Image (cartoon, rainbow, N blue to C red; front, side, top):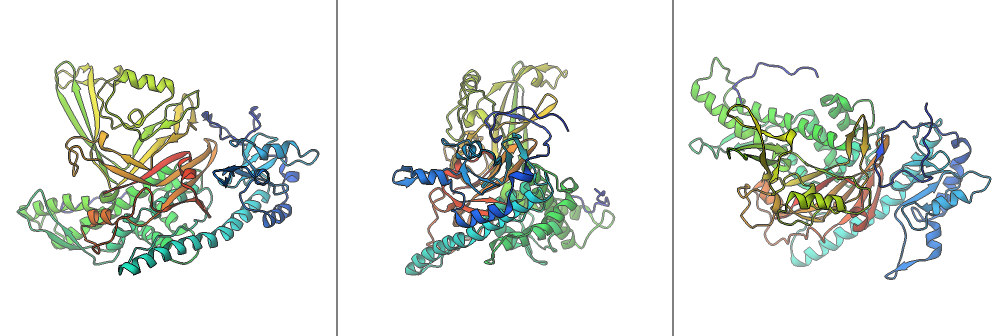
Length: 594
């Protein structure tokens, strides 16, 4: 950090291809394509019939499966993938179910066309006749109108039920703690978020951040103008800790805090993210225009922009503590102090304290045995998904010790992939490919090398990015292969022996609490969120903030405690854990277990 930086910020119709008569959530990858308008909407969609049917039937339940009364362990077997006919309001299970009642309903419709259906979990609209996913702009406003009605109906019916569940959970917990004479923690709620126009990618990420409890806690500590902020120098113990006064947070940080605060308030949703989204667009204009975007890119831009605001806020407070010195007025000692406090202070922003980890890359030349290392911070870890022709599950979480590259290749061919295969920070050393050979310092010659990539600092919140989108020649493709992910993840096999704050042989456990799911294809899809409503971790809060909470409070079980909620824009529904684990995950949010 310099004493004063004078620089200023710079302003910143074709033929349809024949496909199977099924919605396009098949397991294989798909190419990017352009959707076409549908000629069947005018006679295959009836708003009045749908409204009447929805009012008279159970929501998101296949009526035919219900009639069959199939049981498993005494419980009715009801598929979660339910599609609603936009002609008559019939609700039937989708193509991934055994019975495929939605497709059967269309085929048995006779003269009347019942070809246009909508998924009640993802809001994807599909025409069986066209074999196409439809846009709400496909034909006048009838599709947009019916989707708006269905989403409002869902919110109306689900909100009361969900509120009762949350209230019962809170009353039960409070009653138990009153008996013990202790005050308990309230379970945070979940609210829907209005879609501003193709902003589901944004909504899904915000839902996960809203359940990142430590984020709101740290933001709440420093939200005020004049907040005291202490900077201690471990690298220079001869310098006394510096206490500075922070100015008001930046506009994006303030908007994010206010929105997260609104998500926790008792009032009913859904909430409009317009103010927060507009502030983000000021920092990242690429998100303007309400086009389909990528959730991972959104997450990076949002956290980076907030981090930049907080860094500038801390730097300004340090300069103010030294009476805003300039390069002309500051002496050498003052410059050194400002630099030292600035270097340590910027690392104390809440984004770094929560999300930032560190990877260490070690490369050893096989000819001269020269070793070079490089450390890089990360905000998430990207995991490649291997495409396969035979549908077998990818195992994410069954960790083992190092194995050979040949065994890894055999696993890939068999279709059985473990975290060791997909996780970049692997403990196994490997030979570099010809294009990745290391350059020897002496002479600049490329030679064979062995590379090791390990985690040298673990974050409080671990975000895993499953790389479903990739370049295939001149086109983009999506890998729809399912990836199994664990509720509890041990990161120890991928940590360096010198990993900060980790003892040798100690487990490094993380608990799953959030998922961003992408359904659909490259040409059009939908992002939703699965979040785990739970009691905030007392130990994690103490570790990050350094404050001790009330003694005697029992830590909630990270795996067994809480319940899962599926959120699709304004649609909020409590779901079983198995439903969340079957999601086509794109981003996974894990919280450190201490």
